[in-house]
Figure 1 (tube, one colour):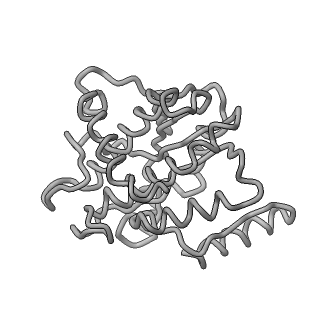
Figure 2: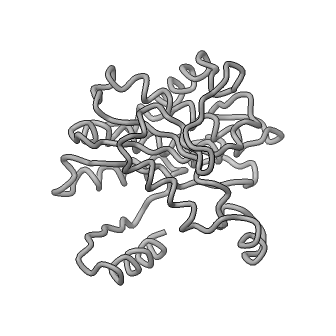
Length: 241
């Protein structure tokens, strides 16, 4: 929300009064119209011609089985599809930077899913499936970046750890005992966004470092990876203009 963004901006300015922080009034990743609006606002800024990085971070977990404004399952809409539109609209600007880097926040829980689509029934593990789809898209961006006209960008998937945020239900005191803090979770994200030694196409785990997939890992289902990217492309097409 805008109010939460303004709180973060205030905190940043308390540490660095000269920091430049822009808070937008609308950024609902479950709504493709909202993401189209956000991307257009970013592109209208004077300093947006060359973007150095994009961290795709917002998400939900363990929510009810409901549909997004455009009719997609809410976890996939929020955790994957809205980010995909934002990325695709900003990609040409990221491509102009020698440092252009896209960080996809995934989760090691993706391993509990065997497939991901834009719609699936309520009995499936929606969060895990959305994170598998997001991991596929991170790998797809790396493999397609030349064809997309962005050969110099880096696409990195990162598992930040099990972080004590309000994405998970339960009392804060309990989450603080069993999960890492948001500041701790941010370290793997910052590292992935800034360390040029982490190569494009990598999956960086907060405690295990670079992960290498075995052939039976669901992340290595190349056919579904390609199909899922194409599903996302078809869904966002009306919002790309």
